[in-house]
Image (cartoon, rainbow, N blue to C red; front, side):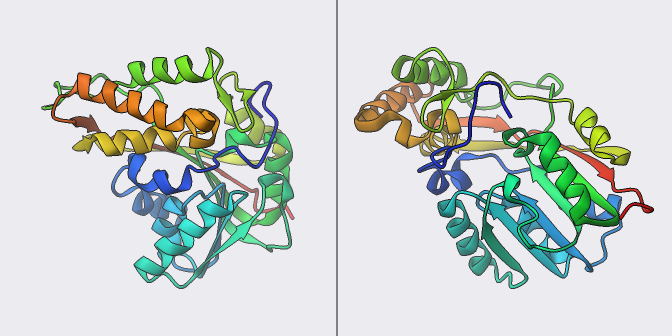
Length: 281
């Protein structure tokens, strides 16, 4: 897990309502690219660990017989259920659990996905458990925004969201050390998933990058939602200063763009896959 951080239920407390609006989507076509890479054909079962409001789960349900989203935040699961009903998805269900609670009686899966969630877990322990839950030849999938994206090809037509200034404001309210949950320091995000998965016994690594690049308009409300969707600026962290923080945040946004409109380029999506050896049980 991230250095110095320990699990608690308040990690994303109050963030679920802001997630769908605040977070940029994954690259268009990421689900189809993954389905092609893994040879998905509508059979088998999907497990999405740390599913949040179901963003990835719901994009992939059509490629499986059943999809299960697991998350410890019940507000996130309630939002995922609402999104499933809105889209008419009937082959997904939602389970309140941590990754460390697996296998949790959930059975065997063809694919297990971690979309920007693996770093919050006890990675070696969870990877070993997932290996046992996968059918032979099944895939462990890690999905994230592309790290170190190329430089912008051209300036966007509107100001970019002032993320540096937002970070300064958060630190002014919450202190210089990035914190999450009940205020525990978080010192960076671990990487080298390849080493973790190799130790667990996975092989046959592949990497797929799905380009995006579309420039999208973002309003001040979108950027406020993005801020509150993050673990290190979740609403509960501000306590009785939440209204003051949001007032100051909106002032920062007005100063950056008097019309309260911003432009942002959708990031590419990186998908890394590993297989359970076919001879493994």
